[in-house]
Length: 220
Image (cartoon, rainbow, N blue to C red):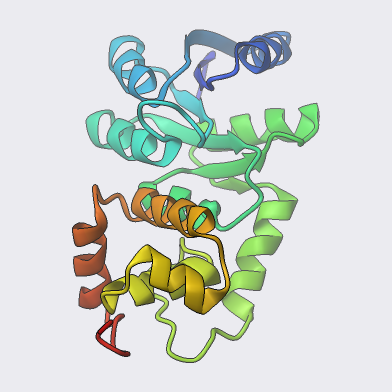
């Protein structure tokens, strides 16, 4: 890419957006052309200003960062997306499946962020050292018996809960069998819905069964 790189920052924390903007604009060749505080606003603003690159947080109101990334890339295929988030977990796989071109943690240094911006804007892919290590560990570690790799964006616990959902178990039953609180199970279920991009339990069960999950008991 030649000329200035036009950036859009999508993050729900105004102080972080301001600091990131200041950090980026001190470097020649980078220009922040917009800021969005929600996922939905990021999608709309991206249509309006057509940035070269979106720096996307994952934990966004209205529309989560993974869903916003997917929609942006569908509406504006020429735009690149670099995820910049606090989540050092398997959400990297959800972002990758949505089409993100890079994934860097918010704790990264200025040089790493600048480098990631330039690499992704130029058409490359960039994953910070901690994220790259997680990807390598995921593909090198043995999977629990009976767990499908159809949904690599899910954690092992989320796979386990999705399998139990596909068997027809209610949250209370899942909580009891896994020695978890019902609130914890509800949080896992919400994460599963977001990562699979489904609206409700029924859609999640359909996706799970199509992938071969739910082959245990029938929940009775």
